[in-house]
Length: 253
Figure (cartoon, rainbow, N blue to C red):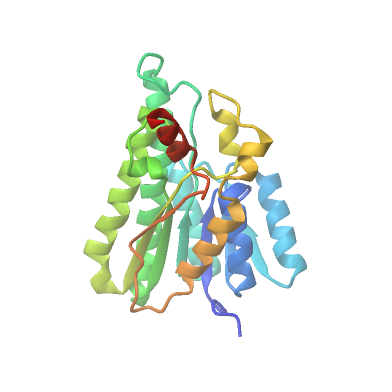
């Protein structure tokens, strides 16, 4: 029997990359999916693929930087299902101008709202569903930039992802007594469309050596299927061929 049969999972950023992979993996375990992202066509394609294998999925497009739109998705979940068991808080973004010398106030707003505010909005919508049942799992996609400060990801993205890590741990502090578990996943380089925003192009060969979306999707499925008495607070997942390590070793040689 699928391990998530009867459960409802809301996946943000579900139209591509890690969110797409997570949605497909959770559907394999029997979860009913609510798919959210800015663009309907990619979400509809993921939903079609889930349904083609006998799964269930609903498409709810939204700009998660807009709190009112997040609340509308929450209202849909309440009316349609009356429950939410799993939140995959995955939506995020980066921008090309990353260094303080070129970062603008508009860029700061986009980075903070797109990575931290949106994640907090979704958590505030999800938690009441979970408190009412005394059970639930929140899984947040942060980044190794949420733990390690480096110029690669940029100041704004790094600061926002540090906030996501702190947010997840604070949820466990407050909500663990309510049966709610929060996991923050900190991926290293993952071959997703966000790489297209890098100031320096990333080759196909380099992308092939990185963590793949499906790898993180498998990890999200594992976390979602853990028993209720266990919380995996934080996980790092990185490429074996870690370009940061390689560069550091070459500098020492």
